[in-house]
Amino acid sequence: MAALMLPPRGGPALGTLLRPLCSWADGLFHSMAQPGTWDRFYTQQDTAGTPRHFNWFFDYTAISGLLLPTLQGCGPSEPNASPTRVLDVGCGTSDLGLGLYRDSPHPVHISCVDVSPVAIRSLHRLLQEVPPPRHPLSQLHLHVADATDLEGGGFGDGSFHLVLDKGTCDSLLRCPQGPGQAGRLVAECLRVLRPGGSLLQFSDEDPDARVPFLEQAGGAGVTVQEVGHIGGICYYVYTLCRLALETPTNGALD
Image (cartoon, rainbow, N blue to C red; front, top):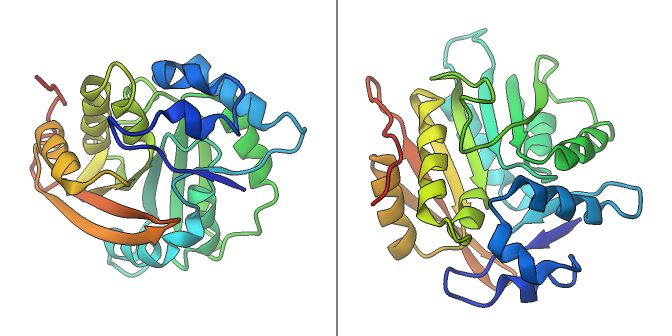
């Protein structure tokens, strides 16, 4: 299982960090918003014929102790309630959604979304190796869709209790299109949240930079929690909640 830390905006060249994993890494930084870029990237990751998980920042086990209680708290509280609905945007071949599906003691319906059909095919093969879920009513679904246009992927307003973003917003913020596409991502994530639902972004970006961006893009209060130091890097989880009767913003950034 591979994991990669993204450099901060304006920090070390991304190509330097990706070069051991990707032969054309120097050009990746300039095309991270293009779907074909990720098809090519995940095709190269699967050259041995056996798919493997690739995780930005860290794997599921590093944050499972935070996510499982959060999952329990954000879903319906009534006995015999319907499953908690979770969306993992820009999933790639991460083990995040699969880990939650496997370990949640409460029923969950998890949708993993990525713009790359190559990544989704690899993740589908990896799903075959996952043990049965802890709760028999849990489900996991894989979708090819653009996280900046979830409506185009068939995801309606108020569809999910929880949306997870581990590295997707970071990759968009580091491409030439910058805050514009990242803002649309945040707006779409908030749109598909149910009232009272939460968007969790995992990032290594300092709160001084990320919080103002999220407040402008999301139009909502942002809370920050330090996840911890992993591989010498400090990571944070940024939480945006969709309040009852709140109308999501359009994500426009000046």
